[in-house]
Amino acid sequence: MQDGFLIFDIFFFIAFTIFVIMFLYRRRKKVQVENKIFFLYRTKIGLKFMDNISKKFPKVLEIIGNISIGVGFLGMISAILMFALAVYQMAKMPIISNIPPVVPLVPWLQIPGLPMLYFTFWLIAIFIIASVHETAHGIFCRLYKVKVKSSGFGFVGPLPAAFVEPDEKQLQKKSIKKQLTVLSAGSFANLITAGIFFLIIFLAIQFTFPMISPTVMNASVQLTDVAKFSPAWNASLNKTAEGILELKNENTTAKTFLEISSFLNKVKPGEKITIKTTGKNFTKEINMTVGEYPKNKSLGYVGLAGKPIISNPLVNVWIWILQLLEWLFLINFFVGIFNLAPLPIFDGGRMFYLAMLKLTKNEKKAAILSKIMGSLLLTTILAIFIIWFIRI
Image (cartoon, rainbow, N blue to C red; front, side, top):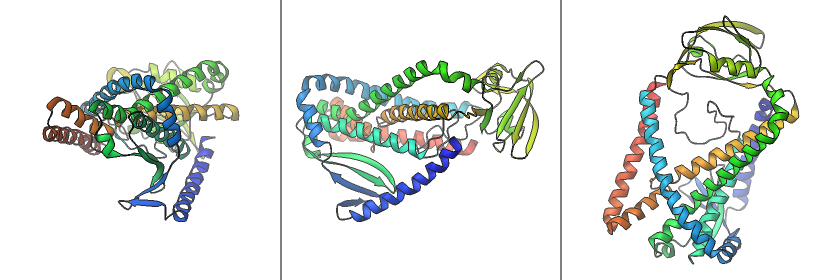
């Protein structure tokens, strides 16, 4: 199903791009162009909803706002640590992933261990993330009597985004605490949304696993990825193989998805194994020696990934839904965290400045400290890509 869906997904992307171009052209008088690539279409959608929520639940929102600030700064620390940890691991690990640890979430991204990020998944995720994030900003603006001039959506090329447009002058006159609440609310809403999707995934698996697990576990396996410079890579195994017929050593032969998964989890460094693969008009056997897992040298490492080949259409649809939910969880979570990074383009950048202003009571010092932190973080991100590029 997934190969067939990829074809549909590409056609859907083309159709969506044509629709966006036609939409922007027909409404070109109402579209504002910024920096030649950002197309903004302002509306009043959602403004009444933000107003109503802020008026009906002011006390609850105040409590949520206090929690949001705390979570926001914890998220900021987490984002900084994630970037620093990525540099440390890349410098230390003997084997580097095919993609860098920090990568833009673009359609058809294939991260090892995760399903493909179809354009359909990406579009649904962006719509949910942007709607939740911007609505949260708008609700807290209205709670503090800051005018929201417009809401709307925009495009970076054919790629969509959403926004609310508060009166920045009014917002900057509010207390530091109120500004921090507005700024942190978007990411906090994304993290809450991520938690909701995680719960949905957990419950969905709990209730459906007994029904679909026999189909999945007894399925044959399709090869989806071979890690660069891994034992499988060095043995000339590549993704031209459409399926894995079997894996075997002296004592065990594994053929099904469950058996192969168990086999790969049990192999030891230095062990001799044979992989039998099949593709279009070929079948071949590859002998290799199991390597050491980069993060734990006592564990075996082969360096291949696969997925079950499912012929049952209902099971395929259910797997598709679970994959969508997985991406909705992951994207909400990581967008929520990384938006809190103290970089000028993110909410976290403004939050860091306000925190420094609170501590120093001096706008000039706060601005200097913010620039220093932003520069350090940008240097860290640049180091990640340089190390990755050198070592791939």
